[in-house]
Length: 253
Image (tube, rainbow, N blue to C red; front, side):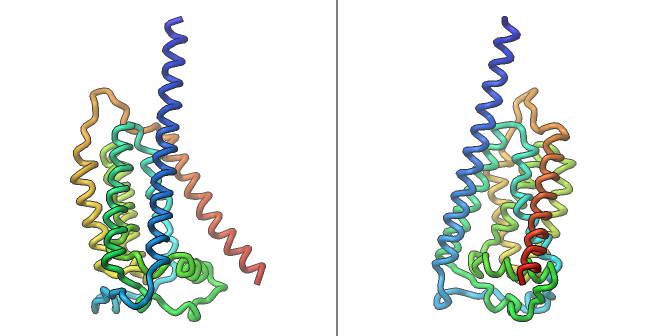
C-alpha cells in the first residue's frame, strides 16, 4: 500500500510540474507576442532612430544566414527540454520575463528602425529558399523592436539557464548564440549596437536572477538524454515545416 501511495504521489507531483511548466510557457509566449507586435506595429517612421555605424555598413548581407537567425525560436525553448529542477525553471522564466519587460520599455521610449538597414525586398530572388525566408521575415517582423536585441538576450539566457543544469549542453548553446549574433547582422535585421546591448541585458538578467540559483542537495537538475533528443526532433520539425512551406509557395506561383 505504501509503495502504491508513493507512486500516486509521484504521479501527482509530476503532473503538477507539467501543468506549471505549461502555464508558465504559454503565459510567457502570450506576453511576448502581445507586447512585441503591439509595440512594433504601433510605430511610425516619424519618431524612430537609427543606430547605424560604419561597421554596420561594411557587414555584408548573407541571405543563407537567415536559417541561423531562425534558430532563436527553438533555442529559447531548450530549458523546457533540459532544465528539470522546477526552481531553476521558474528563475529562467522570470529572467525571460524581465528581459522582455525591459526591452519593451526600451522599444517604446527609444524606438529604433532597421528600415535603412534591410535590403530592398524587390532584390530578393523568390526562387531561392534563403531569399524567400528573408522576405517572409521582413514581412512578418516589424522593422522596429531592435534595441536591445531580444533575439540575443533570450537565446543567451537559455544558455545561462542550461549552464546551471548541464554544462556540456550549454557550451554548444553558447556557440550557437555566437552564430546567432552574426546572423542578426548579416540578415540586416539588427545593428551591432542592438546585438551587444542584447547580450549585455542577458548578462544582467543572468547575474540578478539565474546565477543566484543554488541547487538543493540531491535535486535532479536535468532530464535524461530523452529531453535533448525530443528538442532535436522539434528542431527538425520546425525547419522541415519552413522548407515545406517554401516548396508550397513555389508550386503556388
